[in-house]
Length: 462
Image (cartoon, rainbow, N blue to C red; front, side, top):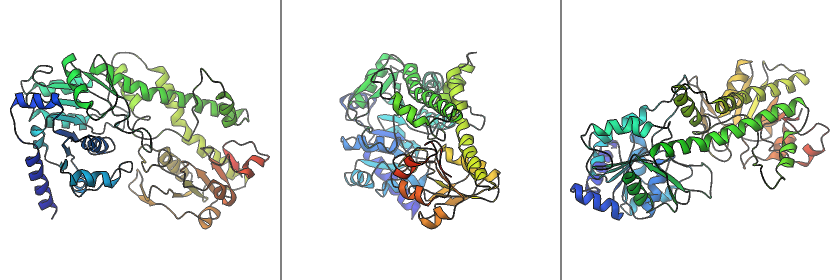
């Protein structure tokens, strides 16, 4: 059945993307009547495809996972921020198909590469997915096509890595085809800023490439920000996330300082935030997570090491942020010791394991480090997360979310709020937990916690 559905998907793609001449391709692209190929149907690619379809653009989605392609062809969304109705409607309109066959890239006027760019085990950039996508495009590259890399990477990737691969076709960028970098700006769980209304940066390897890229993306993005080069666009994306990582590192260090001074860091932050100028509020937490902040700045650090330059702010912030899971576990250890209990043999419940509030994304979540550190000390660790039913561990296990309630909380020796999901009842957590380490200040509004003689810091009940 799956093979039959895949073949049906291939026929639909072929029917949608008709062959035409290089001249007509160029005309269709510049006029906005272009077929859009999106390589990678994950957190970036599928919402991008849906936004384009909503503006009447035909989209062919490509993914190496046959299950993903099959799901899209069935009108389903596997991305929490994108409702299934958007995919179903796109399918009903005949404007969206998905396939695993990269050969159909030849029939698309525009190709956007939205593949993962993780870090290797040695914290070096892993652009293997970008290379594979570029090779697939190069194999079928035609005159008049626009190729856009959206995957976050180090400055120079578009020109120094992707362009030479595409040039093997004998075609030249800015003359025969167009090549740009336009970084994704996806914020999981954000109900206000989506693909269409978030300003989009774009820079080409030639001015002509930039011009063509702006012309196409303007069809479904409200505000285009053209920069002078692909490298400027690449560095702008890294700057966005390095800015956040460094400032979070600063406030995390302030949290460590406040803890040693026996001060409430959240009270200090709220006081500082009353200044109407010159201060931007960031809050501490158990560490960085997600697909951007813990990863993207390392791409720049790697690039600059090759140029004999050390990115000191980025590296220091990374070290501080990486220490926060250990700090949180230390608070659990202190609280258990105060109750005359060892970590070894204690039951610890983690509340929230996603990397941020109200999402199901566990990529690079600090909860994983907290789990491993507690288990290394001999604790029995359970978790509850309303958005994450199953949680694969690094050692191959699959943990399952426990039902939230009195038996879970009262049955624990210690409870840790790692991610402050809106669905978690802070009052009940405070009331029922024998020991509570609140790494997100989620229980600050609970009256009982404010009336406690203990300062509202990390251990709020113990």
